[in-house]
View 1 (cartoon, rainbow, N blue to C red):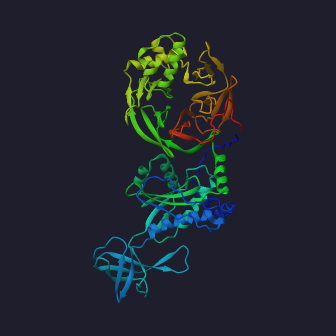
View 2: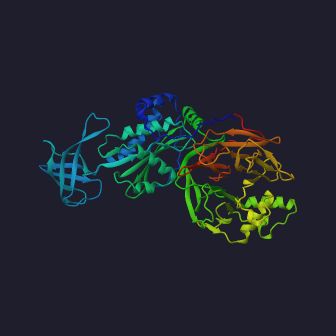
View 3: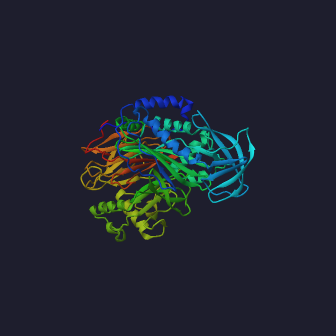
Length: 596
């Protein structure tokens, strides 16, 4: 299987800074010149909102060379129609008395309105002010007004548009976001062409603020739009265009976020059929991806808290631990959302670069098999059948070990007093052959070292029995097979952070490693597999800007395929990279490395 790898990057730079967007669109449209075969419209999945408008499918005789342009125009028309819908229309004038039929809310006596008239031959459509009206009498279906101010000699006439005073909506338009693997030039050009379509409108004012537009995009992906909207005082609404796809159509959404309500209030939707040229653009998007083969990356999410450890749970849940708290995140496409949070007990020691390890109950089950094989005592209260599935054991060089229980709905229980805390980790420690003294079993001991870093239990060689893999304090990779008496030592592979179990296609497990770096240095993600008794590097990413501190293999979207989450340490905070396993593609080869 051939795959592509390229550094993941994003830029909210305006296309118009390097080339005129209309010229770029013409180039893109030419590339789409292959005839489109119209297909039936299908329903698309969009987030829930107060109102949704769906455009008609493209006409059968549409010019295939401008189909992308038509998609943007169709959605832009919906946006314009939403804000340029007149409050009413003039139906009659008698001297200085003007009668209008309202199309909006019924006014009160004394309210003022503006009479507007279209300017012929202008594209986009423009209006000019004729006069101002003052409401004199209100009936159920007819409003009597008086002309109180005119801009020229003309009067209000039948058919003129009536608008409210100060009806201009000040909008911030986000860069177009792509939720699919697509060549980056496409969402950039779509966003810029949409901006051109919405400019110079009588009732919609699109503001220019490059830095703020970047913040909109980041807030959308991180699920913090409410906080972002709360900080805005110069805008009425924030528009977020997004490219999606169904099985047979490319979809352009425009999502409306009200600054006053601090929430999404409406969505406009347009779509176009996928043809071979569009599919080639979708395939081209993967060449700009730093994702492992068989995966596609979602936009990275940045947080202001430094992550120390991470572990996946069932149901697409992800546990992240910081120095003072633990968070439970849940996957809601296209990112992670906070589900629960709990504070950790006060630290016994404060470390400049603390170490933390999360151990799943399944790891202790595997450890029990090792201990049973060697006829070592197994504590009765943590026998393999009694280890809860939603409980993690946590070790740290700042605190005594503790249990994190996620079995409750929306509640995280932190337990540092239970006897099973020590007994569970004692079982793990027996397998790793750590120091016999009880006080030296937790990393680091006073004056001691971590002899086993990030131990992982999985069947890595495909023999059906769990093995244990860890990095030692000398930077070597140690493998202890299920039936081996001594561990095998390997150099030059880096630090093991996670192991993806073997898939249903009977391919071997994937060992996820990072470079032996620390303290913010640039890092790489490496995938290795055992093949014929040898551990072979099968893929390596381009460099991340900072150190990778944790990796989790977890089925985020409950589709049966194991996804990947990579945590990158930032100078102030953390960045989570999400990689979804692609349907129908192998994320690990059958007994051998990925082919390039």
